[in-house]
Image (cartoon, rainbow, N blue to C red; front, top):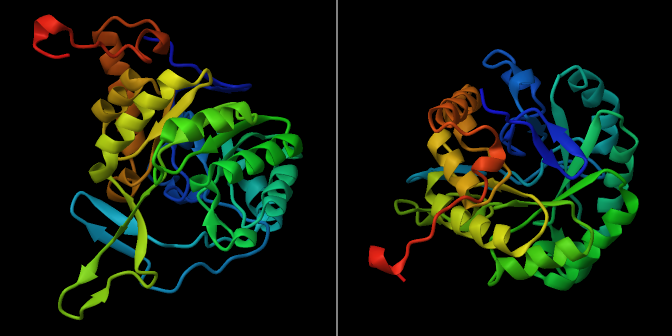
Length: 311
């Protein structure tokens, strides 16, 4: 069987199949459906410095080939996570990654510092798709100087593997990827959700209480693949791909585009055992193709040449 061990910075995972933040809870929610310890990593739901109630309902909506969400980072804060959640999930024989959020750079650093003290948390994922409350609500991840500032600050506060999750809602994704790489990121994960909306024609009102929300699911996969491919060619750190991965074939396409690991998100809502099916499918594909390790496939996308009729 092919070697699936994946190394992201100092973080070593048994395989490249991870769960995406906000779609898997903290892990115990899925214990009845899968063997959690078979996963390469769990990225837990977003954590902030203080408790957040999230946005008003309705805050989720199904769309053709995807879903919109505007949950608003509902969580009980980092101290609750440290005291109540962390002791329970430390039992898993897999990597636990905390998705770190904040409305200010100081809040990001507070959460990162507290995670740094937790032995079983060997990596954090810095979600820079949050509004900067000190800059009039500007999203950290869509303003390059802000992305640089928060990454540099958290890098000083956190000694382990730092993954920065990029927003796709920018003009040049490569610019942001290179900026956070130069600011201390050990890895980049992408893409976060695309901004979208849904309207109820009968009531003539938005479906979501917030009007707009984050679009995820199969509808965004072509955009995600393109951005992963662009970024993987432009940086020298590992890329973690996500966005519409529903099966093993989808995951393999992200590896070919240059991703060293993948995260499964919306698919968990449809099929709670999908991560195991994806993992088994990757193993079967690699055995069938006689690949010995992930290195044989990551970034191995072939270019068309002139004889194929393409430029």
